Figure (cartoon, rainbow, N blue to C red):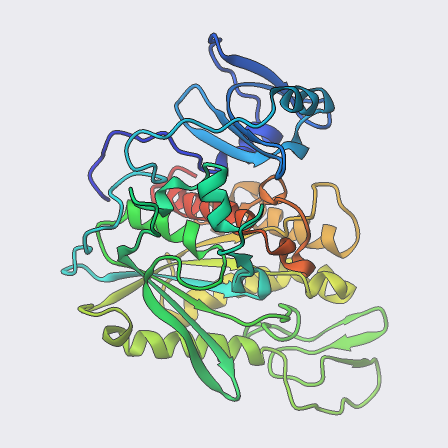
Length: 424
């Protein structure tokens, strides 16, 4: 763990769920503190307003402990929204220090290369793939959010250029044309036109670890856990008169009593490709993390489910498949103690029905704090992302709004640190 620094004021997002949905802040009154009400009128909380952008609906507040929170105005009551509109545009004050989330430095210096690389594997479908625009000049673009909305100041240096972390490698591989394609392998920074949650995740983990960190993303879009990503050991089952394939069976489903006719794909094919590609990177570690002498798979991140929610058989089976996935990943990477952090789909609210509700309920049930799976206590956690999403849906890539991908990434990264430190 990196040495403690003066804790900078920050706009970390994981606390938004606690602040606006799950818990009531009990804060001491201050001159500029205002009482706010949640959109459902059930909860109130007291925080200081720091910034407001009417065009995007972004609200920035300060808790009594010095932590900044950024969220969309839609989580507030209409009376609060009317108040914000009466205030008008409000630029937040600059942060003290470097504004980084968590603790530690800004990644300007290399990590301690005498220690094994801490590898975190990112899996899923297009949500994890990343479609947040970085260069858009309007609301939703990452550059606009940083320069015009005062968000994520740790991403840029004093001259406004994108900051590069020299202690976190950002590696992304994808199966295409029957082979592994390296999408990028570089130090963590903003270089591509789109981002996923890895930017927020990487800053939290880089600040936490003295050891070198590698984010290893292995995924492709439009893949379901119930078919493409089905992990080894998953058995076939029946649902509504059909048999659904177990691992390495084909096709996806067939009528009960019929003889299945295999297709050119099998249950778990994408799992095999993604995990095989991740292992190929780790087998050639020094090529992807110069100077590395060893590694440890410390954790997994999972943001997926859009395809499963559209197939009721898959959504109904999601919880069982998710448990099998966690167990199989730890076995495949010989990492029984690796932590696991997953995120819900941003458009899905608690209480939702249908396939969306199935997925949300499954992810909340598998969270170690639910008590349903004692073996996951303290090592598996779910991030509820609805209050972190700035609009749109998983199927539409959240309207390519980079703030959604940053908010979710920061929340997932902070949750992983909480698991690593035993605080969750």
